[in-house]
Image: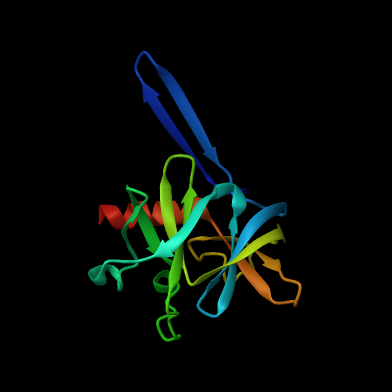
Length: 165
């Protein structure tokens, strides 16, 4: 199976929209390599809007999800360091927010550091990572280490779940 999701939006007299969100599998994509904790991750470049410095409110520092003011727009964000529970690793002096879109809306992904563009061959996840929410695949880097690929659509649904609760 491919996984993914289907969203149907219908308005009487106006029509129906069918939105298919299909995860990336065994493809080559342009991505942005980022560092979170001691690991490297890839965010698909097609979903990235911009990168900005992360300046959280003092009471938001310990939260997994909250909101950030990005150029006058209030956007939800997910702090990947908190999501992946890298609390025992030393936190960098500054962090960045990668603003992404999932077709429906924009959100922020808080990372420790943006490294740069990276052409990525997507490999399927092994059994160990198969059920980790927010990952869609992996890639092997030039130094033979592995970088995990973040799934923007799954992370967006995580934020929506947290906001509802």
